Image 1 (spheres, rainbow, N blue to C red):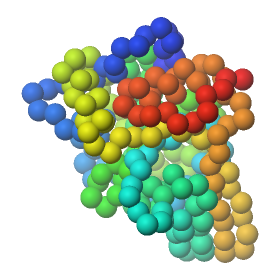
Image 2 (spheres, rainbow, N blue to C red; image 1 turned 60 degrees about the horizontal axis):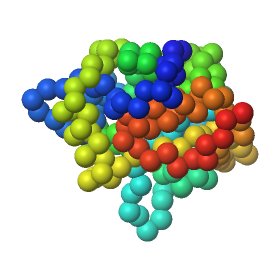
Image 3 (cartoon, rainbow, N blue to C red; image 1 turned 90 degrees about the vertical axis):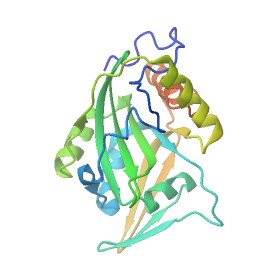
Image 4 (cartoon, rainbow, N blue to C red; image 1 turned 30 degrees about the vertical axis):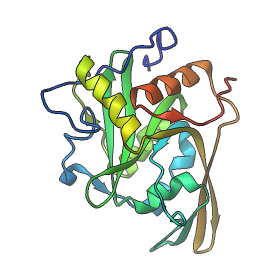
Length: 222
């Protein structure tokens, strides 16, 4: 991965494709028609997420009396311990993506609701286990969709930041998933990784800035 090269020195907005019309998340999500998304089997995915190691998790806070914390399926009950995982309970589909940015290739998952709206994103970091990622995409038949190389467009970059301030902005967290299994019950939790490389930390900052997200995790490099 070369995404993190010169990230600390480059404080420019993310270079994204621009056009005369703009919609939120246009550079990544507008090209994804609903039929491209795979059905989300959350209980099966929960077996893979802990194997990835450190990742960057983005979600939008929602105003609810209480977050959705349980999902029932053929394998029993899945409890979501971290409040930010509420987005998983509300998602019905997911897509995998890869894109070449000015800083190198980037890979992520997008979790979507029934209307196709993106509720959460999971970005790979240099600290992520890429062998586990490859095994997961094969086992779930979730082949990453190739994106067009991103190009800089000042107007689109400005609007992305403005929409993030006006609307419900992303929150970004450094996560490492944890799973516990009991008969007919499993739990999925997420905690900040105990160690993260300096390269991983810089890339997390770069992605958060490009998404207009607030990075709310403790920032400590190993």
